[in-house]
Image 1: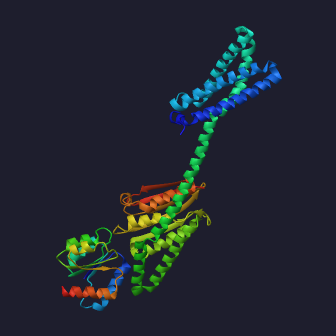
Image 2: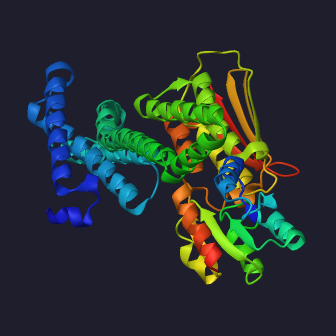
Image 3: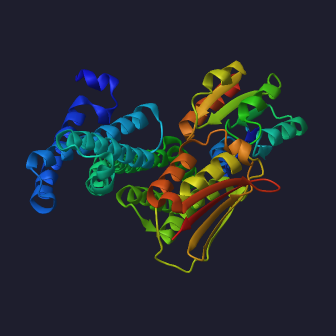
Length: 114
Length: 352
């Protein structure tokens, strides 16, 4: 799994929330913005990408457009207005921050069923 | 509505002119009695007639010239008074001579030698105050109106300042800022409790500063810098290495009065539009100096620069600018300029 999130505390939080799911879920890389996320995506080829939406430079939605079809995408964001756009880009899920263990659990379920 | 008011300018309504005419008549009559009692020892009727002839000639001429000035914009206030008075005296004197010579068979020569000079002198003596009174009334009203307008303007600015203060406060407790900050605090509980505590403290102090700003018109420069520092600390935790900052207060004045929420909104703009959208982030430098009774505050960032900043100048810049104007008037100035190689600099100068 690749995580794209610009704020370190949020990144750390997500990583720690995902720890219980090892080794099913392995975090192969993190990126602080859309451009870096795409670069890492090309080299690492993860099968799941967690994308924050509001990031400097290229945002999550734009990055998703480039990844579309090649991986499963989950959006994690503070803003709810991008939900429709997100699903148009074939997102598996759209989680609102702050992320809770329960909500993350549902996302993992969805991922495993896809 | 007085039908005259439709065609006459405000100071030339029938009512006004009748009022002035009455005053003139009273003045003329009093002058006549005074002269009769003191200098001329002539029959009072003659005094009365001459006095009124001169007085009303002056009145008619000055009012006509004034009307031309107000309505047709011919001439200027001085010309109106001077020419009106002059012409009025001549016409008044001539008509007096006609009257007097009709009853006394006075020759023109005699008239010129003895009477005209006196008439002219008294015409000027008494005419001047009358002329001045009538045409100054308007200027006096105009200047009173100006004072009134100035008062209204000042009150409007003050009201706007209060409204913008309120809006500013609402913007500070803007949902997204609070939400994102609390979100980060929540995240930090899992991974770094000490940082979480620090962040809550920063938020606490910052919000208290905001509340204070609605209650106090002025705080101190140090206090404002403190509020701004805590605000930046919050973002520093969220942005990590993407935000660096430095605050330099070289004024040496610890209790310098300063309005609240002037520097912080500018820093907010720098972060929101300059640094946050920039992948590598940047730095904010705040410096305060006090040179030859001018307080100079510079807020400089190495962000995306002006074009991006100006996409949404919004609350911050506008409010700050207007509040500075309402508090310091022309003594305060705010300049925004780009910085090389990238970034924006805002300079505030306040004459103390």
